[in-house]
Image 1 (cartoon, rainbow, N blue to C red):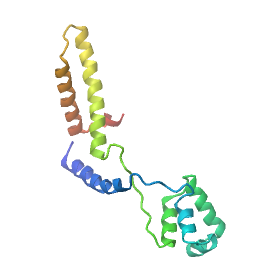
Image 2 (cartoon, rainbow, N blue to C red; image 1 turned 120 degrees about the vertical axis):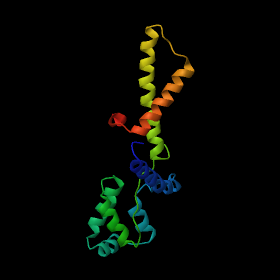
Image 3 (cartoon, rainbow, N blue to C red; image 1 turned 90 degrees about the horizontal axis):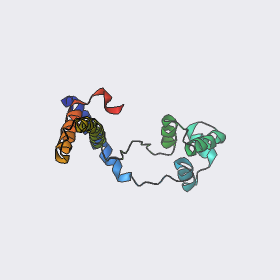
Image 4 (tube, rainbow, N blue to C red; image 1 turned 135 degrees about the vertical axis):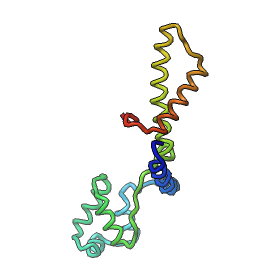
Length: 154
């Protein structure tokens, strides 16, 4: 990593994200959370609307917007509050952590750079062994991870 502060930020985020992995297999109800929770509690649109200070029609629109993924975090937070719940959201990295995402990307870039150089050397009859190429990729990836250059996400 370029500096310790950046590394610390990533470690702290990865710790927070680690807790979200527990719900990685969570299936969102097909009608959305608001509708599902409201109907499970046998709460009418009007009753939830009264708790939020809005009309029943507005609650229905909220449920439709949640289902179509066009609702705001602010609105979902207000609904949660009206349902005596806490709204949470987060991101779960496909690679399990931010650090792993950076590492994967660094290796992809390193491989591209090293293989391009290796191809040039091969054309000049200075071919490298596979082991040497792998070591070069590993070294280059470690350098990219340490430096976190701007081109990392290009």
